[in-house]
Amino acid sequence: MSKKSEQNLPKKDSSTNNETVDLGFSMRMDENQPEPQIPVDLFAIRPDTKGPKSIGVLLILGALVLFFQAYGDVGLHLSEDLSNEEVELILEVPNSQGDGSTELTVEQYQTFHDAARDSGGYALRGFGLIAASLLLFIGGIMLLFLNGLGAKLSLAGAVIGLVTGITGSLLVKGAADTHLVGVLLFTYEVYSYLCGVCMIMCAGMAALPLINARARMALYPENRVVLEQE
Image 1 (cartoon, one colour):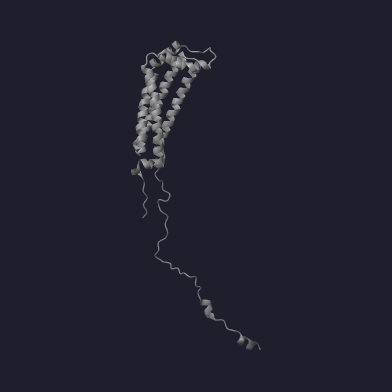
Image 2 (tube, rainbow, N blue to C red):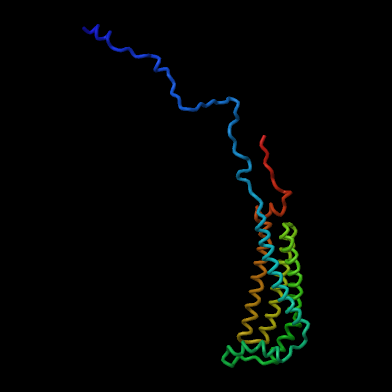
């Protein structure tokens, strides 16, 4: 009985095991196909052209402000005596803020003005800031054209303005300590610090294109490093 049942069972076709499934597409691997490679300049530093130009615009604006301040200092140095109307206009606000015990007279301010002129503070600060403003202005224009020399000229101008501005302000403050009192004395003290802070900011902006790698590549493209892959 068992032998007959075994003979009646359908036999499996062994060819079905060797059939391949048709996926609708075929793939061929080329043994000579090169392996994918990462570009050598994928993480390379790119030149930044916008940064130096933006700094150039700021330096030009700062140079114009410095020039008008320097023009005022040179005018004070060349003025032997101020008119009573000018002195009264200067003293109007400081005298109105006190209690009346520290009011300055026209003669006292004229004495301070003469002492400040004799100390050379107006001349040093005025002519020094003129030189600084010219260098900053020229350097700012050169930075607009991505000329690396502009950053160096601007930095030199900022250093000149820093030294002459602070030194001149201290000389004027020394005359103010001797002849002025009250609010006006504090004004000249604050002005000396303000001049130093402004020039330090100008120096920092001028040095930034020389420190930043991307900005330096835009200013000096001939020094760019090129990576070559064999």
